[in-house]
Image 1 (cartoon, rainbow, N blue to C red):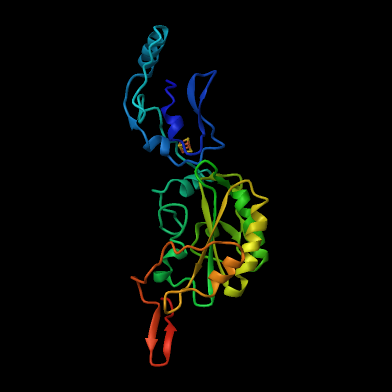
Image 2 (image 1 turned 90 degrees about the horizontal axis):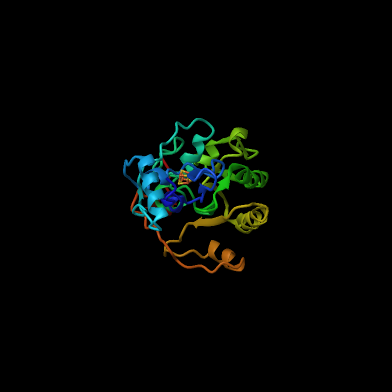
Amino acid sequence: MACGNCTYVCPMEAIYIDPKLKRATINRRECVECYACYDGLSQEHLNPTMVRTVRRIFAALRIRFDPEPDVCPTAAFEPEELTWPRMVRRAFSDPRVPHESTGVEGRGTEEVKTNDVTGRVKVGEVGFTIEFGRPGVGVRFSEIQEMCWDLAKAGVAFEKKNPITSLMTDQAAGALREDILDEKVMSAIVEIKVPVERTEEIVRLVWAVEKRLNTVVALGVGARCDENGEDHVVAPILERLGYKLERAKTNIGLGRAIRIATPAGVREKVSS
Ligand code: SF4
C-alpha cells in the first residue's frame, strides 16, 4: 500500500516505492537477504485493497492515513525459498543464521578476539581480520576475491574455520567459487595469520588492494600480550604506520589455559 515503512528498516536501501507501480519494490541485486524487512516490523493483517481505498479517500480530503512507523499493516513480506548461490547472501547478512562451516551465527568465526580460548594466534604471530562491507554499503564476493588473490600471492595462511575460506576452491591461490562472485552480502571477514615480522608488509598490502575496491575495509590486528599484559612488539609497528592505539578490549583468559608455567618457564600448551 506504499506507506513506505519498510524503506526505513532496510539497511541496504534496497526497498523503494516504485512511482509507476505505487508499491514498495525490492531491488533484488542490492538486497542482501538480511530479513530485516520481514523480521523488523510488526505485522498487521489488514486487507490491502481496503487500506489503499481508505488512503485514497483520505488523501482526496487532504488527510493522511499512515500506520504506526514500526508496522507493516498488510503483512506484505513473505520470504522466498532461497537457493544456491543466492542463499549465501543470507548466511553472511542475517546474524541469526548459523553459518554451516563454523556453526557460529552471523558472518564470521569468533575471530581472533577469542584467542584466549582458541590459542589461534601463537607467540611470535599476528592475526589479521580483514572485514569488508557495512550496513548501507555491503560487499560483493568479487571484491573479496581481489583481496584473497593478493594475500595468497603473499603466501599467508587463511584461517581454516572461516566461512570465506570454506568458499574457496583453491586456498593456495585464494580463489573463491566462481558461482558466488556476483553475490552481495552485508559484510564478511577474511582471517589470516603471519609471523610478526610480516605485520607491516600485510598492512601495506591491504591498503593497496583496498584502494581498488568499491567497499569499505576495516583491518583488525590481534597480538599476544606478554606476561605483564603488554604488547611491545606489534604496537610499535602499527604506531609507525600511523595508527593511534587505544586499549579497547583485553581478553583475560577465562577459557581454556593456553600458557602453562613449568619449572623451565612458561610454555605454550598445544591446542587440543
Ligand atoms: S532482506 Fe534486508 S536487504 Fe533485502 S530488502 Fe529486506 S531489509 Fe533490505
